[in-house]
Picture 1 (cartoon, one colour):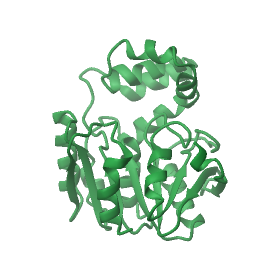
Picture 2 (cartoon, rainbow, N blue to C red):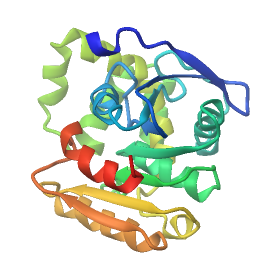
Picture 3 (cartoon, helix red, strand yellow):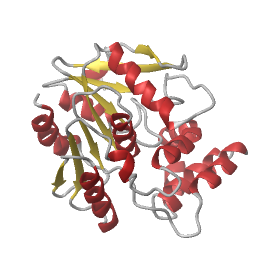
Length: 267
């Protein structure tokens, strides 16, 4: 973390008054990096990607509402997070590129569709892959979190929703730091689920409203249903580019993202 130790946390004020924390590294055009479920600036892929992208951009990492140093205001709606992103864009000068990973990609695309001003938008594997038959993700997450069962909510997300092996939550509990971070962020899982939509289906009508250049990325080692979903996303966005990153899965490396993002954003 030595390379980012001197970063200064800044705050943008969203439309509902929520303070959203972010920091920036590098110089050049502003590029806002948007994380997926359970992640924040200090837990997830943002830091590694911020470092590599800072060679050609002012790379901006932020804590989505309810995570890290950002505040939270009820009631929640996906539109509030689009407003959060808009607030950061305004705070860094009103002119920015936006990239998102996983549910952060879904948020980035939804924000672009809602007219949040951005020059270009890119997303890696927005997980619009449908939901398991008989499962209601929103209802289950709400029930667990309303009962303050954060650990069980994380378990449910990692196994039933993501499809990880049953032993994964057990292993993570042995890693105190990561497990603590995930438990702290657990209440925001229902936010991500709402960003994805009740059925986790590609929102083609929404995506058709995106009017800025868009790039849709997928890993070459990702499951067939993820690859198919990204093809649908790209087909729904007018003029979108679609690229496959060979050898990558949902846990994509920052180094693998660097060339494509740099070419697309023009840094």
